[in-house]
Length: 176
Image 1 (cartoon, rainbow, N blue to C red):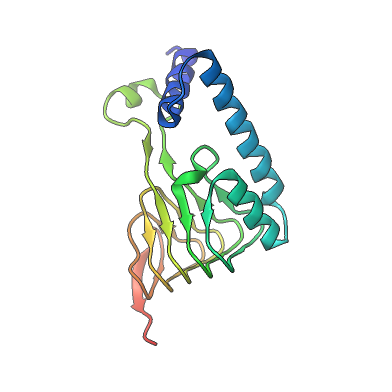
Image 2 (cartoon, rainbow, N blue to C red; image 1 turned 60 degrees about the horizontal axis):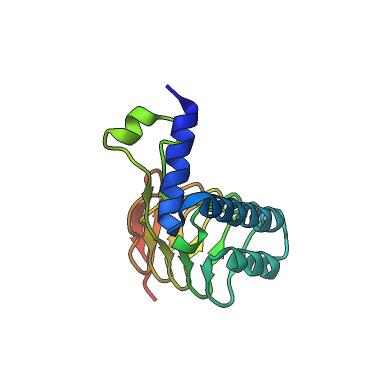
């Protein structure tokens, strides 16, 4: 399999998403990804949550007010604008949030029903994401819900719920 050809397919997919074309579009895309990576790199190991929030917003992540993002949180490097985080959200260390899925190096899969997919991720007001969780594309985490440490969220978590596990399942409703 020609890896250069797969690289070209990947680049074209991302360029199409951002509405870019031609040589200038390639240059623009490379600048965009480099800028996103540098801002992410600066935010990744910072213990100052307000600095992390500021840098992630600069990347295009939509983040509300009074949020706490711990160190070592990875927010999608290519599609940060597809991530929306409400007000008063807490995200624990070593959490990963992805707005896309892509069988990057497998041309056969890409061309036979498993293409790159890009979908929004929404974390609503007051949600708490435990350390080491993985939030996948197309998911919504409800208002004032808790995702237990190490959980893998691949579906919608309703408002006022406690969810944990792999895949994350609601184990309890929060009654106030």
